Structure formats: structure tokens, C-alpha cells
Image (cartoon, rainbow, N blue to C red):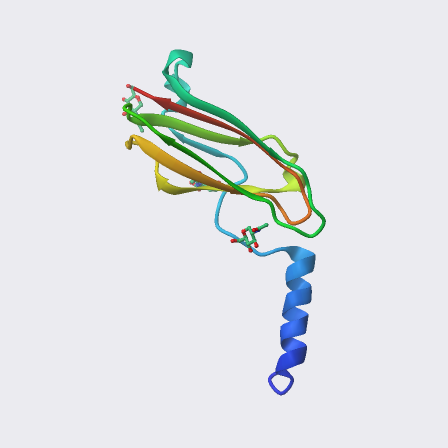
Length: 120
Ligand SMILES: *[C@@H]1O[C@H](CO)[C@@H](O)[C@H](O)[C@H]1NC(C)=O
Ligand SMILES: *[C@@H]1O[C@H](CO)[C@@H](O)[C@H](O)[C@H]1NC(C)=O
Ligand SMILES: *[C@@H]1O[C@H](CO)[C@@H](O)[C@H](O)[C@H]1NC(C)=O
């Protein structure tokens, strides 16, 4: 491998294409005190849908900024586990009055996330 860098790179690209890149993040996010979340405290609700594109990882962000402090935050993946996808907090979150959630589909798969933010 060491003597054939071009071959190694091609192999890595191929493996990347087949398996997708390992990334930090969770299939779904449920953070904070969600068992106590009240419907009237929901400050933001968004459904994110992106169609699949062959071999492409679809990405999206969802942001909220307001007066309330976030105490529960959900980004629920509505895909099957096998269809994959990840969500992670980019900035803010629990205890803050703002949050940016980033979501990625699995390569070649659609994305469906239900984002709910509760604050008071
Ligand atoms: C992601 O999942 C792991 C394993 O279930 C868990 O330990 C971790 O707290 C989760 N992270 C977030 C941000 O939800
Ligand atoms: C969740 O709410 C309970 C009751 O108000 C409180 O005791 C607990 O500390 C809270 N947990 C977090 C993580 O905010
Ligand atoms: C989505 O994010 C990944 C990882 O950051 C990146 O490799 C990929 O190119 C992005 N997809 C699009 C369509 O921009």
C-alpha cells in the first residue's frame, strides 16, 4: 500500500463510497428534561424532509433563538434504523436560549427529522 499511494487513495475513496463516513452524532437526539416537557412550552417545531439523492449525504440545520431557556430538545429521526442518519448539536442547547442542530442523512438515503424545542 505504502508504495502505491494512488491505489491506496482510490481504495479509501471506494470504501468511503460503499460504507459512508463514520461521523459523531446520534440517530435521534433527546436531551434535557423531556419527561417533564409541556406542550405549551414548545417554542419551536419543524419537520425536516429531504429526498434521497444517489450516493449523496443530505445535510440540514435547524436553528432557534428566543427568550426562553431550553430545557428539552428533540431531533427525532423518523427513518428506520437501517436507513440511518445522524443529528448533533452544533451550538447552544440545553440551558441556552438558542440552538443549532445539524442533521445528515446516510449517503443515498432520505432524511426525515422532527425537531422539537421546549423552553421556559
Ligand atoms: C448518543 O448516544 C450515546 C449512546 O447511546 C449516548 O451515550 C450519548 O449520550 C448520546 N448523545 C447525545 C448527544 O444524545
Ligand atoms: C428535571 O426536572 C426535575 C424536576 O423539576 C429537576 O429536579 C431536575 O433537576 C431536572 N433535570 C434537569 C437535567 O434539568
Ligand atoms: C454533508 O456533510 C458531509 C460531512 O460534513 C460532507 O462530506 C458532504 O459533502 C455534505 N453533503 C452535501 C450535499 O453538501
